[in-house]
Length: 443
Image (cartoon, rainbow, N blue to C red; front, side, top):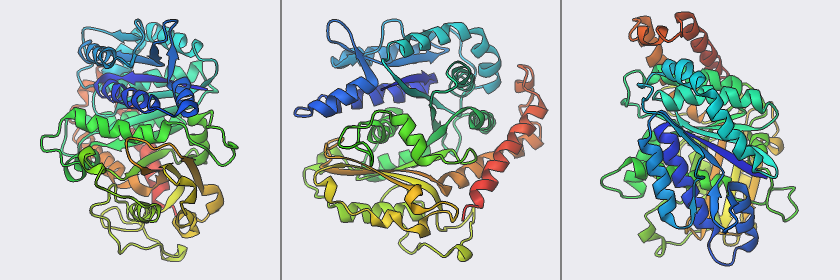
């Protein structure tokens, strides 16, 4: 089964290009015939000349980033984008969600839907659709939300996963918190799952773990793409009987999203280090999984800075503070192990009922995928996708900042002129306050 990726705006297109590059490089490693076949079927179709073409649609209201993505893919010599699988205009959305959602989206709906339809019809079987976008700007967030709404209307029974890049807390765009509120509140009604990467976290990984001195957006995008690749590449599930899983999005959603009030997914990956250091490093499954488990419960996104004092508490003792360190309660976790001796890895620490909410058994809440094929040049690697309280603090901060601006009516006129009313804002605030409340009360 195949995944059709819809890349929206600058961030979505750049991360998407990096993701396909990583997937293609990984799939074309020697001695991986079954794995490579499963990976290529999932993400690419082949031309009559044998060229790999990404199952993707590229959308932006400005042509520059799309042209760069097309060129980079073609220059790789391993894969390319479809010759007509992209849509761009000459004028952007001005970092305004309302402009993207109310103007550009409806204006170009037919053209975009036709591009997606063509890609879907190239699939023998559709596993689902993955929309990649940021939440800070206008095209990624506004047009991205509108396109997701269209996809839900046209493919009501297909899985839709939205991958969101969360802006830097210090600010990229003055109205980024408005755009984020509007995006998240709408996607919560449309998407089956929302997978989030925070720019601040990825930036720290680049700086502290990868030792990159001058960090570029390309570095940040590559780390995000590597983590996504660790999730989306073929793996063996508990009931796949030795055959690589067929429906990555369906199985991801089934494993992690058991309730429509809880759709926010975060990612941790271990190890992460400069490629020059890998040859001099040794990894053991007990060591990797011990660190990853503590990263989960202490809500640390990387190995450095893990708080080893945090321990699971009995249900009656659990409290949740949005300001101080505390135990990170999970609704569900998916652990994906790749590499040497993967079948010997002991994962019982992730089955501890104390990690999970009381109304779901750990047997239902924890899922394990494995592949003996190494990924991203690591002999052993582990990726944890978690539906937990990990995103509660950044979500609460974002909603709080947006509310403070809204209370002063700052920049509201820029949205109302495109058709988004103050009542629309209030409805979206209410929706996200309910999400925050639900995650806060996990115990």
